Length: 137
Image (cartoon, rainbow, N blue to C red):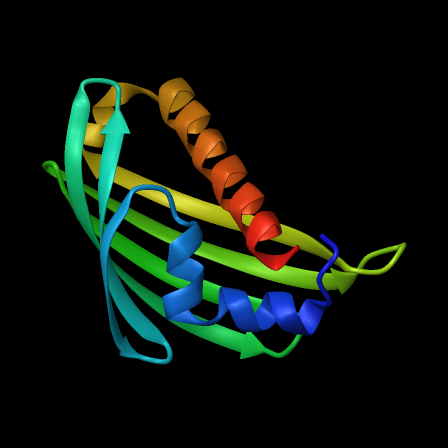
């Protein structure tokens, strides 16, 4: 990514900005600088509808690290996600982003199967990273 890590860090830690790169977001409510909620359309095999998601930024180390927790409910399912962004200077300038996530899925969505869930998660991650690069280029 060509943007400096300070710019990337500020973007991923601003609820109003970061939610613009999440796919299929219908609404966003910012509670405070570390807590926000969103409603998003979800489509996973035969399961389609909306989920309500509460997000909390757990840790901030400007400009190199951020960690957040999300809890999504809806569609007779729950998703608990913890993710982090580690930002490093790129070898030729810009920023290298290391993203990690751990999700626990229960309810109807868990019945779909891990291969399908992994494929959908990979698709969403690629969309989010692509949108982030586009917004910050």
